[in-house]
Image (cartoon, rainbow, N blue to C red; front, top):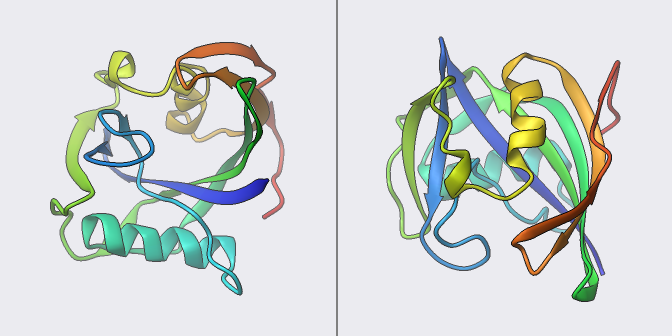
Length: 157
């Protein structure tokens, strides 16, 4: 079943905010904040709501920078249509919640070894302010079987 999801990264100067997932899908991995878009909600509204729920901040004018579709060969029902955002302005201060523990990282010190297996392929594009899209096939959330991530000129929400 196709599920529309979001990932949002806060950025300031030469740092990016990652959050350690404390429970559920992705537990034990650093990532942006995000999750499922709810019925009747725009993708952008879903990204803002998830950021509010997971780290207590309200992003202002998040920018869509990537779109990736994830599949899992071990689960033919798994399909995440993922919209990736950055925000450079927000209200509130990031803080830990039951679900996420946020931490600022220098863009040169991204902990790829403790992230999703594909993040090292597209995160550099995000950090270079480039737009990207692609398709990833992940096996058991651990091994990347296929990817076709490319830089693009524009994205559609």
